[in-house]
Amino acid sequence: MRNKFDNTRDFYNTRLVYYLTWLLLLVSSGLFTLGLFVSWLTVTDNLLILVPLSFTALYLLSRGQTKLAALLLVGSMWLFTTYMMLTRGIYTSANYAYMIIILLAGTLFNERAVLITSVMSAIVTLVSGLLTAQTYLTATTSLITTAKIVTDPAVVYADTFGGLVNLAFFALLTYMTVRQTHLAFATSEENRQLLNTQNKELGTVNEQLRHEIEGRR
Image 1 (tube, rainbow, N blue to C red):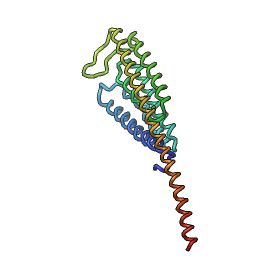
Image 2: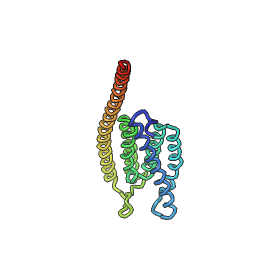
Image 3: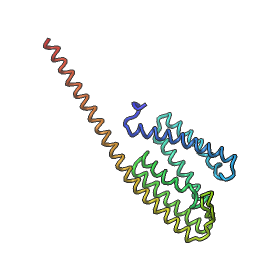
Image 4: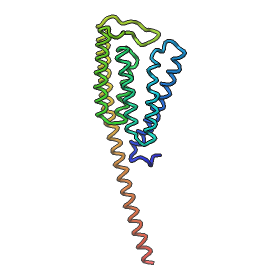
């Protein structure tokens, strides 16, 4: 399998997309099935859209389209999270998914993807907080055992600001980590190519020596 890829990073990215797509498929279909039997899972119908998207990503992987599959995976997760944020409010548990998406985008693509997903996620978080504070969205905490209605707009604004600060710190750490990781991959790839070149040169020298030895005989 590894020989099909040009470098180590492509190999590991393909494996990561493959396993995450299957995980997304199993989780979404499992929660949808569970939602048919329990009443407190109210968003499982929305998860059903992730099933065909996951199968599409797996098909793209089978055709060798790793970047398209990765883009579909990250994009579908971000759009689903955004939908939850703009319909369920700032206190939906889906807002934590933005951090996972930012990390995933940086791992599969580059530092620019971290910046793009971070800015877009921050804008949605701010809009969701404003809508929640203005009571356009229900401000209900997401913990089932301690669920409560938040009625004070100042609390919503404070929680929104705290969420933006956490998102910014996480994005910064992710950016630096992704940058160092990609530099390490690049260095590793350069060393691998240098080693292959040296091996070829050594093979050429050995072949010349062999011919010289045979010629002297």
